[in-house]
Length: 145
Ligand SMILES: CC(C)(COP(=O)(O)OP(=O)(O)OC[C@H]1O[C@@H](n2cnc3c(N)ncnc32)[C@H](O)[C@@H]1OP(=O)(O)O)[C@@H](O)C(=O)NCCC(=O)NCCS
Image (cartoon, rainbow, N blue to C red):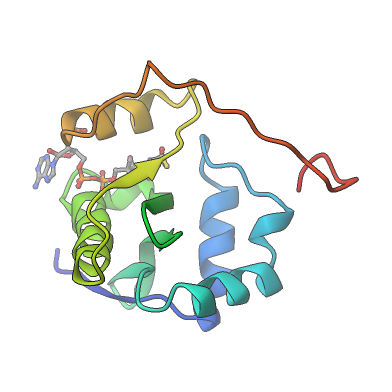
């Protein structure tokens, strides 16, 4: 099986949102609306990617940065295309692009219940931050913001 990794554009939105919804362990929120995704891609150009095989999108990853640290989200590969290196290829594309703009350290938030995801990151050499508690504050009336 051969695949290509290319930059994600807003035209990929319908395909990728469908893939997120079908994937246990991935939370889809208001922040994943089409408009919000367009803004995210404009704000973080060249940092989100899709994998294409058999003439369709089979994986994707999004990343951005705050000028200091990188943040990776929504790494997903369709089940029938897993275990062939696409996941590693996708996140490596993000790390390469982030490094080119001077961002060397990147974080990812993974649900504790996502066993596949947690095992994957650990096996790929990412370190678990058990010394940090993450706190969030939601100013939206929408609890799924
Ligand atoms: C996590 C996820 C993106 C990995 O995608 P993937 O394409 O299977 O990833 P890779 O093929 O690059 O690597 C997966 C494993 O296959 C192994 N592998 C890679 N190429 C391989 C090959 N040709 N043959 C056999 N194994 C291979 C890797 O070493 C890796 O092993 P590990 O799981 O022990 O670390 C995928 O499982 C997924 O979409 N999960 C649901 C969403 C999710 O949890 N995302 C992460 C949280 S944000």
